[in-house]
Image (cartoon, rainbow, N blue to C red; front, side, top):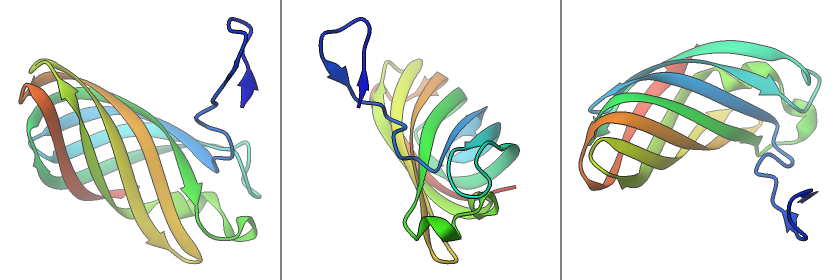
Amino acid sequence: MLPSPFLPYFVVNPFFMAEAVYIDAGVLIAGAETDIGFFVILAGSDAGMILPFTEVAGGGASEIGLGVELGRIDFTGPIERYKANLLFGPRWKVWLGPSTGIFGISGAIFTSEVKGGYIIGAGIQLGVGHSTPIISGGFNYGEVK
């Protein structure tokens, strides 16, 4: 929790205790996804590093468009085993959220099994393109390089 200078209450910090945060931008075509972005490492021996990445994935979705994503990454194992290179490799991802048919916002979750635990990511995606109105979502499997 962080104090807010604008509110008399405490607000939740969505990145509190995260091992890393990420931001990316890319293209999604009915579940096929390609992104470029970067990780900011917040914990472990690699803390302070900023690492670029690319992501390519295939799956199924009700969307075609451009988007950006911001999120947090957690490691389920002991912090002594957490290294930035664990963020790279295969992963599963699902997302769901409201859509106007042109603009959408989704919550996304991804996971990958790594040595010593799991990498779990959670983020917010904003997109523009064509999608099913009211609710839009999808899933894919891909690799972060």
